[in-house]
Image (cartoon, rainbow, N blue to C red; front, side, top):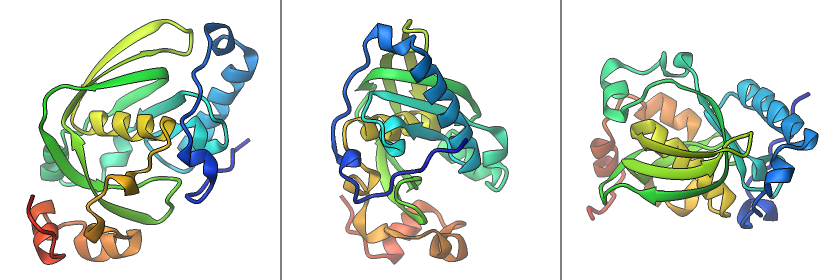
Length: 198
């Protein structure tokens, strides 16, 4: 069974989700929810899904970046993004800390802001402390695209969408991005769309 994806404009996407207690994490309800979220993520397809995106205001997200999701990228694009496959995993009650000040910009989309994309600055490296689906503590050190996914999903758990962080002049339909900008370097996109440096 696929879950309905909540779209921007619904209040649940703008609320800080509540933390899960260990006893809840091990419940059958949460186990089933994780399975249904995974099916929904694969169907979308996407690289991450947070519980508020399917109408559940709880601090739970899933992540999986399959190798085939990078097949339409050039070797240069994969290298620039530091993108590598990420196996399926669950993060619960995450706490994110940037590892350094440096931010990088790439186009980003969202299953809850369907059919749009924009350049979004994100930290290049992060540390995340969380619980897994068995309520076991886990520390994740991530860089590149994986760090971006973590920041995007944890934002969802705090009521933030990528549109709150995007370079607003680069906001566009996925159709226009694919047709006009997909092969263009991000710095050239900024120049052509009149983004002021800074």
